[in-house]
Amino acid sequence: MRHAIAFERDASRWPDDRERPLTPEGIRKFRKVAAQLADFAKKPGRVLASPLVRAWDTALLLQKEAGWPKPEPLPALEPGGDPNDVLAQLRRGKSSRVALVGHEPDLSRLLAVCIAGEGARVGIEMKKGGVAELRFSVPRVGGATLRWLAPPRLLLG
Image (cartoon, helix red, strand yellow):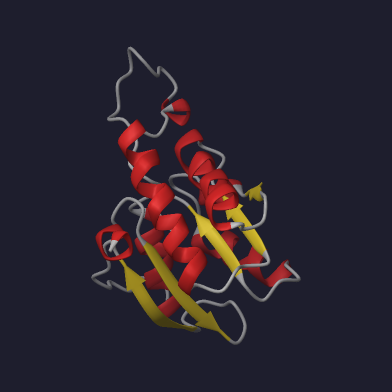
C-alpha cells in the first residue's frame, strides 16, 4: 500500500522530508479507503510501515479505521530501500498475511521484483492511497502472483 496524499515537498516547512505529513484531504480520503478495505480485504496479522511520517500515519489510519494491527516500523520500506530486505523480513515473520505501507517508486519496484524478478520492468503504478495484493507460497524474488491492484478512486466507491 502506498501512503495517502501528503503535502508537497517544502524544505522551508519540513527541512527533513521524513517529517512531511499527510494533508487533511489525504486523511479524509484515506479514512474512506481504510473503511472499504475493512469490508473486503482480509485483515492482516501484521502491518509493517516505513517510519516516515506520511507512511506511518497512513498505517495508523488503517489501525483506527479498519481495525488492522498496530504498525511496526520497517526501515527497508523507506525511500531507496532494498526489496530483498523487505522479502527477508516477510520470510522471518510468523503471519501469513502482512500489509506493507511505503512509498513510490519503491513499491512499484518491490511489486515488479516479487512478480517478475530482479531487473524486471513491469508497468505498475501505485497511486497515493492505492493498494495491491500479492500471494506467495514463500516470499521470494519472482515468487508472487498479483491478485489485485486498486487505485484509491476504486476504493472510494
